[in-house]
Length: 82
Image (cartoon, rainbow, N blue to C red; front, side):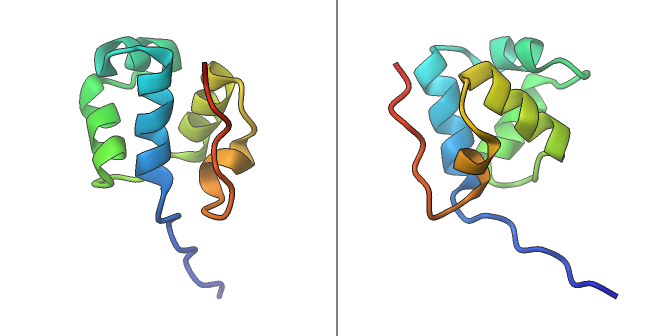
């Protein structure tokens, strides 16, 4: 069988960076992401306590207008957002 993938070390940091760059509260971002996400989910993602499902990472990339690779690849920095 395959082995589990490692979680990107910088994922939580980048998710927080995206939300702050957009000037949104956790509650506001949760509404934009949809799929029944709450500010509790956003908080866990930003603190690295939970890993968001791929569809949530995709929603972050769409909301921030960045490539998904820029979020999940530790070797790539996010562009300056705004």
